[in-house]
Length: 442
Image 1 (cartoon, rainbow, N blue to C red):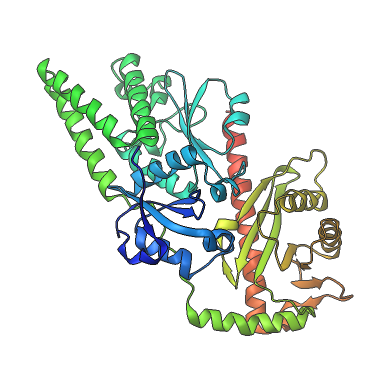
Image 2 (spheres, rainbow, N blue to C red; image 1 turned 90 degrees about the horizontal axis):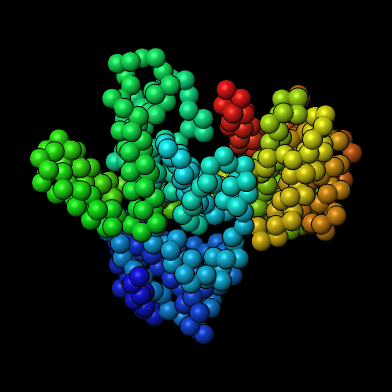
C-alpha cells in the first residue's frame, strides 16, 4: 500500500484536483482523520473554510495534509476503507458505531448473494449460509452506487430468497437469474445448472475482490482467462471476457459515486436568521436554535414498527445525521412506548451532537413522554409536538396548543417540512421491513 505524500496545511493550493484519499496529521505525527474525495483540493478546502461540528474537534490540531491520488472515485472509496482499517485514525473511530459503517457481504452457497450490512457479526447468526465480509466502508451511498456500477460488469444475485419468476434485475442484464432453474419455462433455463453456478460464483468472487483490493488483481486474472480461452480456440468465451475487461476499465474510470458537497446558499442563511429569531421568541428561549431533530413512528398494529430521526441544521436537512430505528419492544401497539424507545436509543449517543429543539409527531401525551425522557438525560433542548388532525402545535411549558396556520408563514413551512420529512423517512423504512417480512414468508 502506498504512503501518503504530505504538505504543510498552508499549502492546500498545491493539493491535486483529482480523486483520491487525504489524511490530516497532528502535531505529534498521529493521523487524526482520513477521507476521500472526487477533488482532493476542494474537499480539503471545505474542511477549513466551512467547518462542521466534526471539523471543529480536530482542525486546530492539523499540522500536515497527506494525499494519495487514484484513477477513479471507486478506487478512492476502496482505498479509504483499507487505510482507515490500517491506521485507525482517532476521529474516524470516534464516529464509528454499529449503524455508521458498512460491509459488503457474500454468502458461500451455490448461487452467492451479495448485499450490504451494518452489523456483520449479528447478521451472521441469522443467515443459513456462511458469509464473508469486506469493509468497513464509511459512505453507504457511495458504496451502493459502486455496487450498482459493478453490477453492470459482474451481474450478481441480491435476493434473500430465490423468487418463483425472474425479476427486473434479470431483464436488465444485472443478474444471472438462478431462479430460472426453478421455473418450468424450458426455453429460459440455461443448458445446465453448472454453467449458471459457475457464472454466479465467478462474478461474485471478482466483485468482492475489486471491493477489497481494487481493479488491478481482477483485470490481471481476466486477461489470463482470456488468453487461455483463445489458446483453446474458445473464441466466444474469449470475446465475452474481452468485453468484460473493457466494461470494467470504462466504469472504473468514469463512474461518479460521490455526492457533490452541499453548499448553503447565502440568501437562505440570511432568511433562516430571521426565522430563527421569530422561533426563539415564540418558544421563549434565549439560546440560538441551529440544530432541530424531528421524530416519527410508523407501524401497522405494532407490526414492522419503525422510528425515524431527521436533522435540520440552520433550516436545511442534513442527511448525514438522519437515523432510523427498528422498534424492539413487543406486545400491543403503543406509540408512546415506541417513541420513548427511539429517544432513549438516540440519547445514548452523545457523539451525535444534541439538538437545540425537538419536534415530535403527536399530541400532549407524546410531548409529555418526550419531555420526561429529555430531562432524564439532562437535555436542555426545547420540545414541541405537532398533532396531525388539526395541525395543533403543543409546546413545552405552554398550557394551550397553537394552531399551526396562525403562525408566520416561514415558521409554518419549516415545522411542516420537519414533520413531513420525519414521516417520509419512517414510512420508507417501515415499507422496507414489511417487504423483507413478505419475502421471507414466501
